[in-house]
Length: 192
Image (cartoon, rainbow, N blue to C red):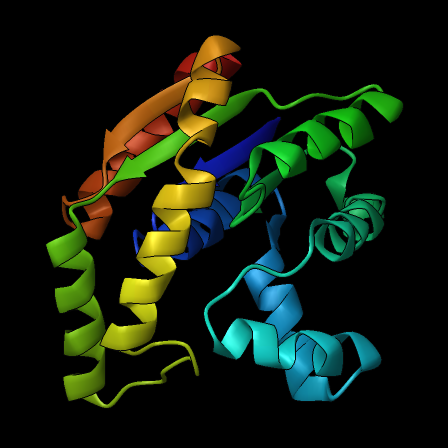
């Protein structure tokens, strides 16, 4: 199964991706994690995207699609993957569809985590107050910018996938365990 987890920044896509990976064995393909790892390692890719990501802007489609294709061709993705944070634009979605089609695969499900913007901002503020591990882009100001980018560039994907009959939504405002149960029920329905 190839699954796209969809929702605004901070909606819980990464958390749910990790749970799906643990419970269902589908690897998580997080472009954000891959790009942050490249930045941390100081690779040429990391150096080229560092400033763009620090501003909360999207990395070029060509760069992201190349990273995804290379990762998807690894043996652990032979039964599918969870795409976390990708695609973020309609051209990326079209490129993902084309890349998968070349491999005889397709997106089976797009799962939207619906979350209120005010809750997202309060989550970032709570993480800051808790003093936990923060990402460099984990500030209220950067989140506000990322939400603007999300609504302009990424939210139109909902209609793109709705038109393909692949979109399902869950309440991302519920406690993590409840969201996990909703996600599991949707996945069980698709796999049945």
